[in-house]
Amino acid sequence: MIRYLFIILFAMSFFQASANTNINEVMKLYSQNGSLSMDAERGKKLWEKKNVGKNGKNRECSTCHGSDLNKAGKHVKSGKVIDPMALSVNKERYTDLKKVKKWFKRNCKWTYGRECTDQEKVDLLKYLSQF
Image (cartoon, rainbow, N blue to C red; front, side, top):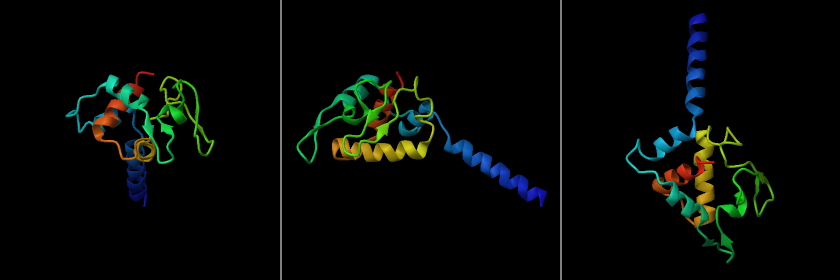
């Protein structure tokens, strides 16, 4: 019985550790273990890129996240407060890989009308890691 309890506790700690990550590990994952170059300047351009949504209004990342990444943003449709993107203010921002994947998928579709490529993701993450 104790043996099984030990195995269960070990498995739980392993899966918890693998679920928590940091921005460098996320960038490595999306860069296909370093095969893609990461460029903060391309990420900045993508962050600032203006896109026209289905409703004809301009959309860009700062539409909801704001122009100051050290401060909270606000979703334009729902009004929900969005925690700051800057790691210097929000240490937990990129620690949950499942959430990072979810929000990349949702936000890229909303902002650009499509999913972001892995190259775009690493460039955006490189840009965001500077704050």
